[in-house]
Structures are given as C-alpha cells and as structure tokens.
Image (cartoon, rainbow, N blue to C red; front, side):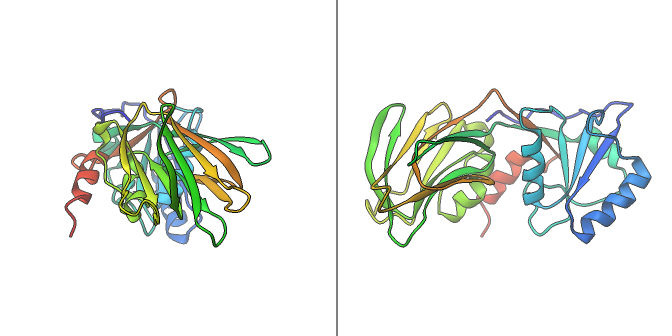
Length: 266
C-alpha cells in the first residue's frame, strides 16, 4: 500500500459527481448538494463525493476498482465514518482543492472450493476464513511456498490491508498497521491450537496460501469484503498493486493520521 500523496487534485473546471446511500440523511444531502453544485455523470466527474458511512464507501470503491481512476471524497452520513470526512455542504470545491489522497491497493483472493470451482475477488479491508459449522476449522498456513504453521485450530483467520487493519482485524486483536509500513497483518480468530499464536506481520509482497484440513468434516467459508465463497479447500491471497483507488481526506485528517491516532485511543 502506497504512502499517501499530496492533494491539490482539484482544478477548474471541476465537475463533481455525487453518490448516496439509500438512507434519508444521505438522500436529503444528495438533493441539496446536487442543486447547489450540480451532479456530473461518473464518466466526466473529476471527483466523486460519496454520502453515507464506511459500508457504502467500500461499495463505492469496489465499483471503481480496475474501472476508474476518479478519486473519491467521502462525507459521513452514517454511523461509522473512519473512511469519511465530516459532513459539511458549504465550500465543497475548496475542500476538494485542499484534499489529500491515500492510494489503496486491494488484496486478491483466489479460492478453490471442495468441488474444484475457482472464485476470485478483491478486498480493500480483509480476506477472512471462517468456520461454517460448530466444529473448529483446521488450517495450514504457507508463506511464499514455505509452510509456516502446519495446523491452526481456530474459528478462522484473516489477512488485512493496512487500511483495513482498524476494522475486523482490530476486533480480532490484530495489530494496527500504518499505511507506509508495507505490511499485511495475518491474524487468527479465536485460536485454540497453538494457544499462544497471535498472528504475524507479513511483507506486502507475500504470497499467502491457506489450506483447509479435513474440509468435509470442518467446512470453511472465505470472505473478501462483500464476496463469500463457501466450502473452500484452499485460498491464496496476495496484494494486487496493479489496481488502486484514490480516497481523499481533509488536511490533517488523512488516513495515515487516523490509523496512528487509533492506536492511542483509550
């Protein structure tokens, strides 16, 4: 994941496009902002303003992956706003002109099911493996072709991006990773054996292979952000630096600063 780059993206003329979550607050803001600034089609918008919470922001970013380089500026109209800026409708062009950008690269999941089907998906937050039934999963972990953990007995395991390290990864007691660190947290979910294993920090160039042991008895599902694949036999995960999205933040409120600040919350 790249180091955030300076802003000053906005130039005249600067058509702005808006997208909004289906909530009343977001839709009302969309109507006011569109009347005030216009609402350019995505094909010509220089910036896309996303009105909603983090979930809708992730949906919007996924829609741009590999399809558009249009930067996205979020305004919080939801309950969670880690990826969003404060909601304010005045002076929007000036805010966009001063915005700073973070370039995010997704994880690519390559999952093979017990039946031999192959499914691929991208994740901006994390790729997670989760047990499907009452019995714990058994998972073998290999890094760059070398077995590092022959058997992890657990509820699951996840690999996170730095941007996603404050999400599910943090809830699973994984480490928060700065954007510039070029590291991927590998975090167990309720590990039973080995009890003292708390995960690992991997170079962002790592190729990770997660193999499900006893898949018929202990079926496992793989999830890449919004995409779920059930009854997987193996899942390969690596960072795809050929694809990126650009997320805009107000000065001094960039994603790197938010990730650092998150580590000092009490």
